Structure formats: structure tokens, C-alpha cells
Image 1 (tube, helix red, strand yellow):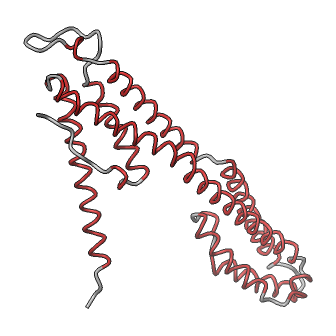
Image 2 (cartoon, rainbow, N blue to C red):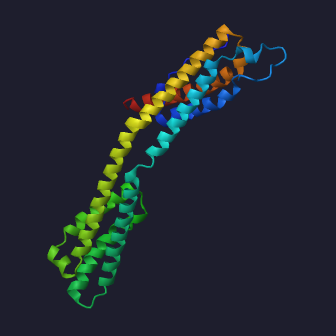
Image 3 (cartoon, rainbow, N blue to C red):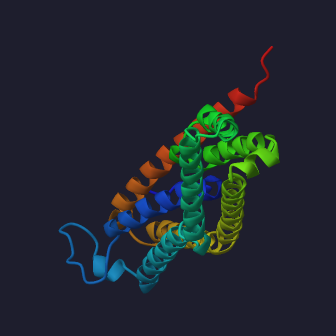
Length: 257
């Protein structure tokens, strides 16, 4: 008697679980449907398809769609736009400060020129961070700001660079605050909506599997054979992925003698 094999989908990562469930949802097209024409040599499809199967498939597909929507929403939290704006602002602040110092290195007054050169050297030391990933840019700006603030403040004020420095630091602080807010929102959504919809989709999958396995016992297994075979193949592939990951993790944890 064909049966869908047991598989603990709770072991899957969030995105992995969604991908697995989407594959299963596609395979439900191989389940018998009410109103299908009978196939020669097989038991009546129409008679063997209970309403519970149709309902279970619909519930499962709807749950997977809700899971999908939750994942999409989690990638577009309100603070995401704020973080992007703050990132753009700090990029502009860096470019403005760098261009200002570049111009001031040609100032006719020697003391002004030397201070500008001292500060510009630090900008050149760290390079242009605006093309780096956000986390790397924050690291570069942190070091740059620390070095700039180590210069005698009166010298920076004398060349009116203190305003540019304050602006750059303010923009970086605003960006870090926006990122922190974004992280909190994403974490809350992950724990909340995504977790809730994942559990609902997982439960709908388990219910569908239990029902199909029961129907193969009560009715003839032929109408469900293709679905069962395909689902088991998907499960086998996923089990292999999990086993490989577990083996790799153990090797990485093994101490080097």
C-alpha cells in the first residue's frame, strides 16, 4: 500500500519550508478531482473523491499563499524605506565633506591648506565607502569619524570643517538608528506573522498527508499513486539536504587536534 513517508518539516529553515510546501502545492494537481472522467480499468474517480479531500487541498493552498504573502511583507517593513533614505543621506554627507576638503587643499592660506590636507589624507586613507555594502560602510565611517575627531577641533573650526564633520556624524547616527528600527520590525514580523502563517501552512500540509494516506487504505490507491510518488521524491531530496547540512555542521564543530 502506497503511503506518503513521514517527514518532520519543522526542521526546515523558513525559506526552505516555503519552497518545500510550494512544490507540494503544485503536486496537488495530480490528486483526483470531483467531476473527472473515469479512466478505463480504474475505479470511479468521481465516487472515490470525498469532499474532505477537496477541502483539504484548498485549505493547504490558501495557507501556503498566506505564508508567501507574509514572507513578502517581511521584506518591505516601513523602516526599510527610512533606512534607504538615511543611507543616501550619509553618502551625500561623505561626498560633500570630501569635496569640500579637496577644494580647501588648494586654499591660498598655508595654515588652512595644511589642515585641509591633514583631514583629506584621512578620507583618502579609507577610500570611498559609499559603494560598499551598508555594514562595511558603517565600519569605515566609524573609523574615519574617530580619526577626524582626533584632529585639534580648533583647526577644523578654523577651516569651517566642523560643520561638515557634525553633519557626517549626524547622518551616520541617523542611519544606524534606522537600521536598528528595521531590524526590530523584521524580527517582530518574523516571530509574529511569518511564524503564524508558517505553522498554519505546515499544519495544513500534515492534514493533507494524513488524509491522503487514509484514503489509500479506505479506497483504491491508484488515484493517489502519482501524487504520493512525487511527494515522496521531494521528501527524499529534502532529507538528503538536511543530512548533508547536519554532517557538515558536525565536521565544523569537531575540534582540530
